[in-house]
Length: 348
Image 1 (cartoon, rainbow, N blue to C red):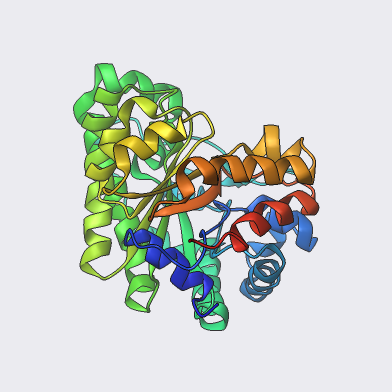
Image 2: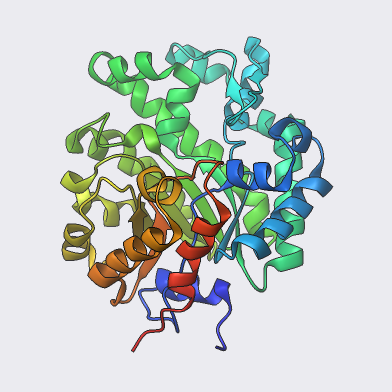
């Protein structure tokens, strides 16, 4: 096989047909940190250890994409929240979280300084690790850095419950906050893309079909995603998008985001996704991370992967992906079985 894992995914992004089915986790930070034997807090100011973990786990997991900074997304908000007295709380299990929400008005938005994101030592650590991981293994694997999508990041600043209410009560505030977050994320990625980063990885779970309806997604979430993806395309970079929950009722909106691919939750009817998106946009999915990858046997994992590929994987542009980020306790044997199916599935 002559194509590298990186080339497999890039071919799928371009709606081409690589030598085999591309395969990747989405994120995988919690699993990798546990498997490597470290913690979010230990890695937060140790770029060298973060690099070693990412490189070590890349060879062990064998995903085509390596996600640096998975689980550190909340630092993009906390970096700007320092002026408001906001910090980060580390957990024994799970990703670090904000200690408080801190934007309540358009006046508060005006007080935010995008440049503050680069003053945060943890953000600096993740960015440095991203550069070094790409230098080490970027010719083989497609290396990216993770972030929240603009709608989700905006909700992190404001607080999810207040943000959801604001959709109805203060729509102009919501739009302005989402646009600010799109600009913030462009600022964050700009130096990395300038240095050669080929893909942005965006998780926008608050834009889930379980939280907002298609009209609300079209009004508030699509435009800021398009702003980011258009900027990335102008720099020669791709954009991965993942949204949690059932988005089967808004499949037609995903090409409008301009993203290179959309990774679907296990709740999405993958056959319907194929019907709507085939020939329009690359997409991935959608093996259940808990019901299948965590709770089934390796043989059952293999069967589930074959079922998904059998439905949609024979066409160009498809990538085998779990329905979301994976729990840290998934057995390695199941993760290996998940990847083996795609790694050995050659196109006819």
